[in-house]
Image 1 (tube, rainbow, N blue to C red):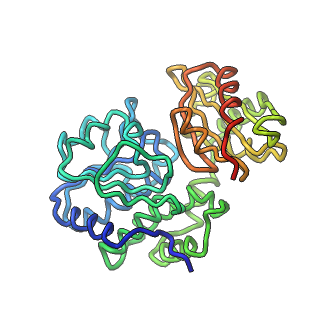
Image 2: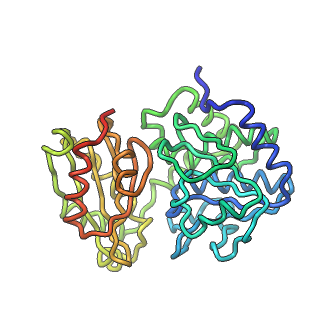
Length: 336
């Protein structure tokens, strides 16, 4: 069975040595964090705290807030705004990104920290040095963290297992994506054996939505556009939501992220996109591929990033212009 993570052993040893030498560590994930970013960060934080390190967890959004969809995560109450982070931590651990610009306002920490460890699984990385535990073939950053944790402690508790399991199921699409291998299921098995409950996690992530979500979904579906000739004839389906939609439903942007899952089910389109208007007028663009198009490369070219089948970026244009620019970028998108 192929390993879930393939990195040189000396890389792991270097990361462990930095952790052993540090009295404190700041753990930072990317802006607008998702389940893999949060689960990986908080799961590793629990292990490092148990080893005696003084741990700070955060991310660098200017308008900082805990995503309401993840307020149920163990230890989410331990995260702090970026304004409360040490100016020069002994150790900085960056999770779920290796791009300086994805650290937002905390980008300068990469230069100020005494040492740096980067833990990630994205192929589109730039701007960060240090010890790099980066495997683009890994299914999730949580998988890389789980491999590191196995070198740090003999066993993990149920809360740590739950956090890493959240990261795993988030980035494998609940084990539906092609990155799901026998080794990935082996990781899941270890996390379940340690106390993660898949039924409880699934209920929190997918089995419960506020009524307002149905209202926003209805508005988004009413604006749906299908471009069958796009992406070299593989098709694009796209829509958008507005700040008025969110205000009427009483929701935040992170609570409507699952709209993309309904849109991506469109059989006639390989690529799906949802443009979610933010309070400043920009659009957070989420894209998905059914398997024929590398949307990660497309979004990287538009200033964002992500995975081959799921990625995003920020657009500073109106919805129609955003769609036009995305269509143009998709015409040269790498096929899978």
